[in-house]
Image (cartoon, rainbow, N blue to C red; front, side, top):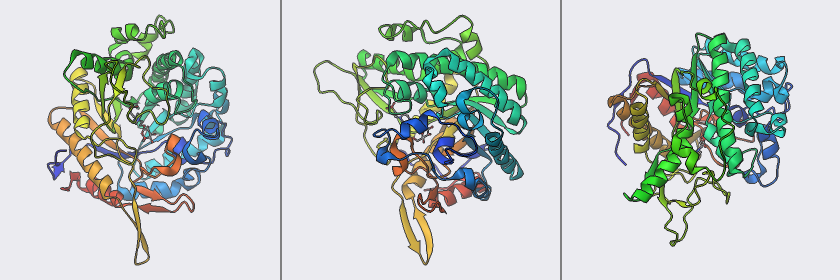
Length: 474
Ligand code: GBH
């Protein structure tokens, strides 16, 4: 790994933020008229989440949001990226808004604005109302129409206070982890369903985007994608082809319709045995292709692959959780290689060069598209110590990870990438999906028994970075 050229300055207008998601932090799963979501069902199904953990309580942000807002203010955050729980504001996914649910986000927005923090609101970070899943979830076109209605209602209710509306967080995860590998809710294993979900998520983005433009004309419109940096094991044409197939499924299936108005042509051939893509109807691509103000990118790690030679032992590295099912539809002949370390506590390899590569590649493909990093961060085993009666959490590995990745953003910006901001994942330790509470991504530590919050060294470090707009030497 390269050593950051520090100190590095960032432009004054660059936004420093942090991010969370509703199901991971709110708790209060049955309060305030909230209906069940697919993550309630999934986490309450034995065997789905490590340790049987659920988001029932999470870090109780629903009741402690004032304290959390004060921490954001003290840290100096310029923006806060959070998500709205659809089943909290429109239980069941149909019909009128639930005023109590709306009131929670309304108070949150007022609290952010009063503290001078720009709200970046995501409409969907994976908590689909269970009733809609019962009717087919994202495999059903109807869900995209329901999402448009939800967007219209909630944007009309909150719109003028939200700086940036993000339709979806990581539709790749919703489609492929939810419907193909099944490590996320709703936990299905059906490649055809996953590809239908890809399209219906894209369509829902277009429909909601149109609603946001109409109802909140002064807001920024965005979507967040977890784009994949996929590298070949060798320079063979076979390995290059493997990379291309994964790039089409993981990146092109979203970037294509969103920014080019078309799916990558190769994708149809590569998935022909699973689906005929007849769920793409006339007019859909025009709707999806609505211009966005800023493209959100989440970056954590890289992937290395090879086309299986049919003889060697198969390799299935991390990235599939414990599922025997792959999220990569029709890619059974591709091997996912164990990457060289170092690794985070998730087992993900640490590779800041992927951040630079991704930003430069995206800005080359879409030269006029502003971008922002909407998530980057790492889980590590923190060291909690008592220093003269004061609790401290030392997390030098996290500071190191963040330094190198923020530096890598700077390298891309120096080379011309138009990056408007960086959101650190995550503000608080939280419910890490199928890993439950066993993995901590927060820069503010949370004692999951007492809910006491303690700033980690990384939070103090980030506070100083924000104050000075300078990445210090490590
Ligand atoms: C994000 O997901 C989420 O938005 C956030 O809620 C979550 O807490 C956070 O990251 C930390 O996990 O071998 O191609 O399957 C990130 C999800 C991480 C999904 C890496 C794919 C493995 C790569 N991604 N992962 S692959």
